[in-house]
Length: 277
Image (tube, rainbow, N blue to C red):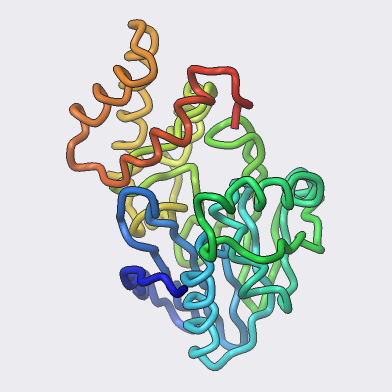
């Protein structure tokens, strides 16, 4: 049985010379969580960032990339949360996929168990198979792809234990993925304090366009708002708020932020005995 889903948002976030930055965002619904994936289009090639969560959106993301008429040189997977790599199987199994070694190890060891765990709720929206990234980014740093300089960084202990970020300094674009949630509620972990420090460094950087893992492309104002959100959450936890009370407090404090379904995913990890991430 086919499932009818709202259309994604597709936009060109920036164009500078031969480089265009595309963003493909799943809907801002209760439990779709506005997953954002991106394309760096240069003169002769495409570089993709993340692979979407639900199968239909992964396939639409691939179709959009193919419509640009240039070969996909590679895809970078930012981290191991399944909403970023479930779409690799149904849409990108023929593409060279790069990730941090810790991310590759997780998908290799736990990927199939994660897929099966999601099947009862997701049904046909989940992939039939998983794809393990083949290429390990063991030495982050500067690399040139199709004449464009990329800077890769390994960020630890924030929204996830290991996260790959990508900077394109020539055009001031910073692919931060789940370091930043744009207009949605954040997936909180016990590493809030370090996460704030990382965002504070971003706030002082020379970059002015931030590509998030959830929501629309953002500026430094959204970075500052994420810092404030995390600081408020940290204080609420210090004041003894937990579980449903904490959720209600954050929703009331930030009524404009969307995708409240994310609380139901992370609360057992933040306040219970489930694994940290």
